[in-house]
Image (cartoon, rainbow, N blue to C red; front, side, top):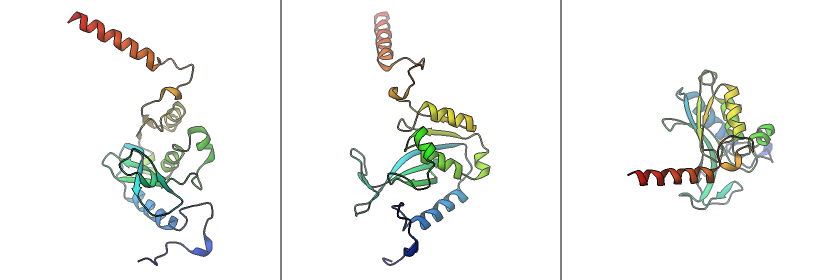
Length: 186
């Protein structure tokens, strides 16, 4: 088993740290996409694949259950089925640089994964759910323009200055005042 090769060593892409596994990964990704159940609700998040060896893509993320390994961007359906994935390697070869500039390095792979979804699935009114690492007004507007919905927690520092949403400190003060008035009434 230690001598199995997934790619030809004479034609390796030097910009891709996963080049030796890329044919196997692409084959797996295509099988995931071919067999994915068509659902409207999809989640996008990071996941760690535990690995303690030496490799250029290995990450160490403190305060996580799996601290060492490969960080993957994953697109899952509501049943937990892995629809698509991409291993994080700093910069992903073949990623749209315009997406990276407009939405960030963490969100650009999601947009690539959406483009890779089967046509029957992309015609659905898809709803994406993600955490505050990915959520931003430009992404939500872009998803809406594509005909999709997006739900996520928005960080205060990602709000435009002209946004009419109250600041967190202001909301906390108002909530505290409301709680105090409720306590006095009871």
